[in-house]
Length: 282
Image (cartoon, rainbow, N blue to C red; front, side, top):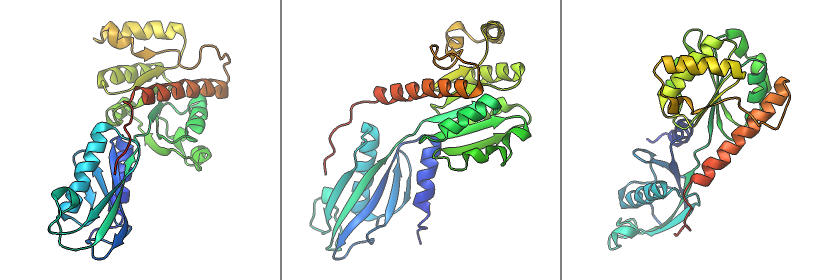
């Protein structure tokens, strides 16, 4: 028996991994059909979870869902099927004799942000970003920065919040982040920051890399990163200082607002780079 939670877990997995997908739902049934109204299936680019009944009906739905993924369509579509052994393949060759409508809903790929260092600025930034629809990774090598009491300000988060407490080598978390993550380096330790910047550059799949700190700090980091074998064009991928240049202030909340606004601009730029969506057809 197919678990009704399988599709829920699949949606969450795709979201966390920033992979596109399509949620397929049986919205109406007349007569006999393989599944009842409300049955769901999730289609990814290379995997399918749960089922809306199998057979040609499901094959057509999977094919159409994968075409929507490939074309990066954002609007939902409805597919209508008359189940008959005399129907053409595109209308689902099955002998049930009923009629089925399927709703195909593209699953949005939401932004992903990783904050390395949940000090005063990091926590203020997390509070702001947690109010947005995104995946938020919080990483710190200090256990006291990630206690449930301290992070209780995120209890009403809209974002999916992931806590990474890494006492040793927090840069290893970089390899676990989903492709396209925006990484923000703002730990309490300059050596840790430098190691994180190096790991972020070598990762090659991050959307942006932001570093908090002074111009003197950045000059030292540039020399260190170059000595470690990072070419100039790679080092240039690091943005520092992060935030809006015309918003002054050194208070943690002010810096957090500035960095959050800068990130929102990055999200908008990402959306604008996506190809224009075509009109959906049933």
